[in-house]
Image (tube, rainbow, N blue to C red; front, side, top):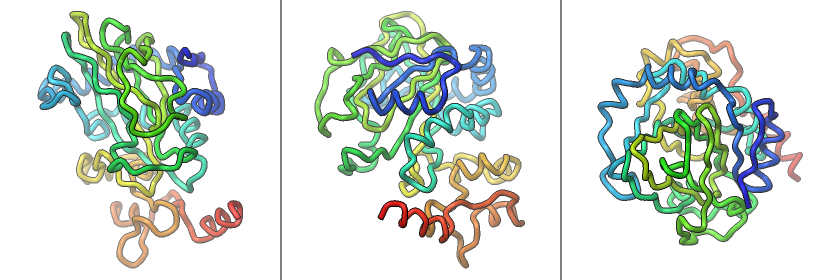
Length: 287
């Protein structure tokens, strides 16, 4: 089955529908490649200083640079990109709130073998989430063209409906080929992996992922983004980073204070989602 492909004018609802059907989808040319070039320029010192991976899964010819909110103003806008948040919100509609899970540039160098095919939700200690429960919704932005030759991410469309802990091979996958500026959406259940780079160019993708707010984030945003930088960021971005309660009673500070109030040392201008009233309404709706 091919990967669903959508136009830049696609809605979040259309993306979510494609993910429900196949577990993955590509929005082609969602942004101008120059915008992602701008992000790479801002990140250049950190990209160059990042060591390659220390094992086969991380990639011994692959560099993974995180902490992007602290290091790139452009990446802050991409984290909050309206189409992405709309689509993620619809995929993760079963929870009160979702939050940022990971920010990372993945640069696959020449001669890198294909990555082991896996599910991203295995990061949660291989917890057996119910088959009909999505804990994650993820994106990979193509900072360069993604081709089969240069290591385009390989996916198995429809595999979000398969059994867990399967051992698949690259031959069972298809490459998510897409021009620079495109976005690959995929859920935490989709079987996928980085492709083998048989070219002489480095394939660069921007991985931004989101998860329900009651799980631990893969990237610790509270340490990745120093407080002196965090206090300068817009409140909606801070809440997406995790400075908000997850559901009703997760993540408050001491005497039930809003975490953003504590960070800013004042009353936040935006509302902390996850009130008791919202929790009660949700329980009633699911009854």
